[in-house]
Image (cartoon, rainbow, N blue to C red; front, side, top):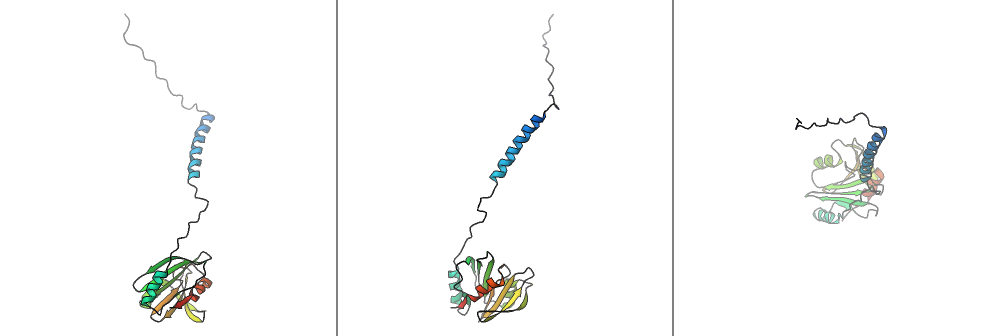
Length: 184
């Protein structure tokens, strides 16, 4: 009598361990192509510098000098100085520039008490290091531990700080900014 049960063939075992060097190189090649493609797509553009955003501080300067006419404000800076920030508050004005050398210089003026305004702008631990003569005017020089430099001078009820703790400009650039100040 014939059996109705058919014999199943034995499962074929995978032949692990029989890969060749060619198989490994093909797998490595696929991975390398994917890595190179991701590297190529992640490259920054040729012009790695971002365009500098400039602002016109004239409206803020006009508004501040309308309230404090004796305050000295920047005028006639060289064309290469690019204004990048302007902040007007109730009793203060801050304007920042990128200098021709690519450094940052800032002008800050306030009618608030010097005990509050001076440490906030020159740096909490800034120390007076002497004075500097700019356009016939004497400016007090302050220096923070990180090397940032500020020039400070009073104009009537307003205290002007050129440089501030955020500035990276050198003394010559700060002198250009301080020399451009005029009362309106």
